[in-house]
Amino acid sequence: MSQSALITGVTGQDGAYLARLLLDKGYRVYGFMPRRSTDTSWRLRELGIESSIEVIHGDVTDLSSLVRGIQASAATEVYNLAAQSFVGSSWDQPLLTGQVSGLGAANVLEAVRLVRPETRVYQASTSEMFGLIQAERQDENTPFYPRSPYGAAKLYAHWMTVNYRESFGMHASSGILFNHESPLRGIEFVTRKVTDGVARIKLGLQPELRLGNLDAQRDWGFAGDYVQAMWLMLQQEQADDYVIATGQTTSVRRFCELAFAHVGLDYEEFVKIDPRFYRPAEVDILQGKPAKAAQQLGWHARTSLEELVSMMVEADLERVSRQMKGRTG
Image (tube, rainbow, N blue to C red; front, side):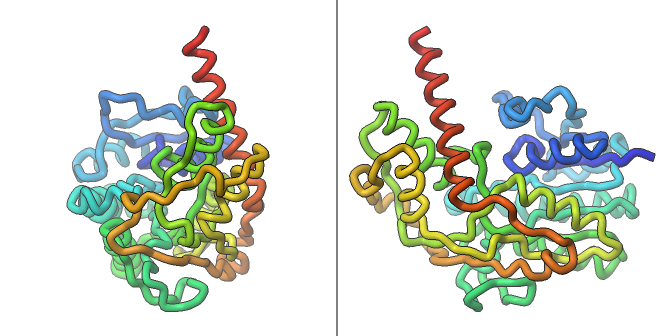
């Protein structure tokens, strides 16, 4: 019997890459998404898979629609990627973030338990749960200390996944993913803000790029690599939790240096510090230790930071050039 997967958050960066991966593996892929007045499917179109996704309308904050979605898809695997995932916005919308990123995950788990308890579940956890780090490199045994409403909501979702696995015997795994980027990243995230800014500065559309804390350090990888780890988790005999990371950490400053250098510019001439972009509680450094994923899943990050930055800058140069031609054409 062919495999079928239900993906919440299918129109996001990870959802789009995961959908393409599963389609390539012969899955029937269902995208669980709310009805929106705005078009959110541009990532699926960029990957050329929009017409291959079977859409089920619903919302993770509504248990009844999840129940119907799981019944309609008869999913053998459910990937819960739906979230209010921008850390900065979680301070402006803490209750919404809790409802979607936290309670939404509990709804997914409960719907699967009620309808198809044999279905395997992936929960998208995050390195932001580590927050104020309690170890130089963070692995599955590092204590959590979230520093944002987003991190706190995701921590609730993470522990609910553990509880459903241990209490009901469900095959529910969490991927504690460190920062992962791509040309499909939302423009509000700092990496995409940098590469889009580089493209616009190079093409003469803006004079400078305003950012917050350049000394914040993150373990950045390529989203296309990380969705492979999600799939691998659900192929294991036993469900478990895994840190997914490159094991290397890089500052925002270094990311800027690489991005501007790709187009022959010096970042120091264009990047300006703007206190508006500082967060109420900053996470200064995150660096993962993905040894368990390497040993048990056979997973390793394949794309270097330099390759990732180049990929993102080139994609934004192409996008911005296309927009310019559209305006003058």
